Length: 91
Ligand code: SF4
Image 1 (tube, helix red, strand yellow):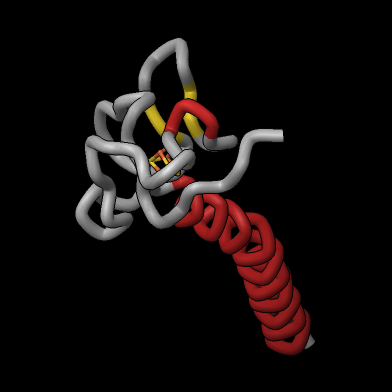
Image 2 (cartoon, helix red, strand yellow):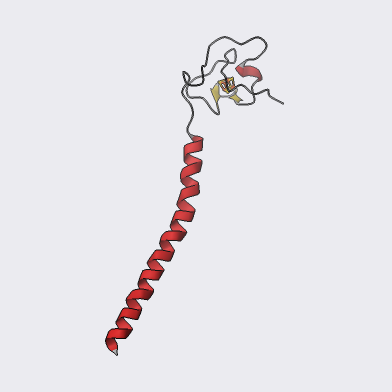
């Protein structure tokens, strides 16, 4: 009888551990996706250039952060006169 109780306890423990694993993966996976999405692209990958492209420049791009002269999507220091292929018109 005691042996059966112990195996039930062990099985219950396995289910609890398995269930917690599922819960953790549900929490950790979206966080990992968000972290990956937050990683910026290199300037060369974005084809960043220090000059504007026509009337398109970082200064009129929605991703430009004027206070820090940075970009939400591209790494490093960004000139307001620059441009890259991720340009998106500031509304
Ligand atoms: S996304 Fe916009 S602000 Fe960022 S580097 Fe490209 S053009 Fe400049």
